[in-house]
Image (cartoon, rainbow, N blue to C red):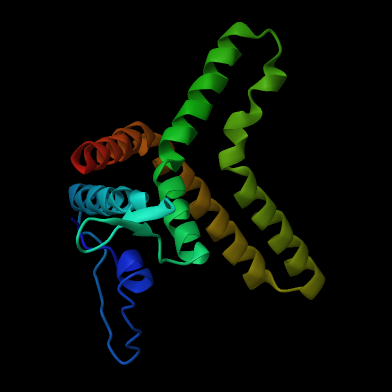
Length: 178
């Protein structure tokens, strides 16, 4: 069983120690990032059983689930986040498949869902820069716009691999849990 702070806090009632500072470096390379992500995703799916109304106690007997509804919601949200890449790839593949079959190009803008937030952020920042008459706001907005679109490009480049990584982690956790 991988250590998981969500269960440790919700079930084991681990307390908050605010005077301790833990600093974990960002992975130094892509493969280190993938190993850490895979480990975290397996941990998220290992505790999926805690969404049920009855869970095993120390003696493996089934008892009423003692964790709060909020903690269950956090577990469910972790599971949802672990499926974002597969869902995104499925959405993009289904849009591409339809694009090949459709005569009207107006149906393909599902791809735009990835860049629209950065466009709105740029538009709002430019309006703010004009209203306040401050050019640095516009320069920062343009820089953030370029960075956000570059991030979207990287997301698309690595999407298939990240999808496989996520699905592998989910499958391994579920198989090992049975």
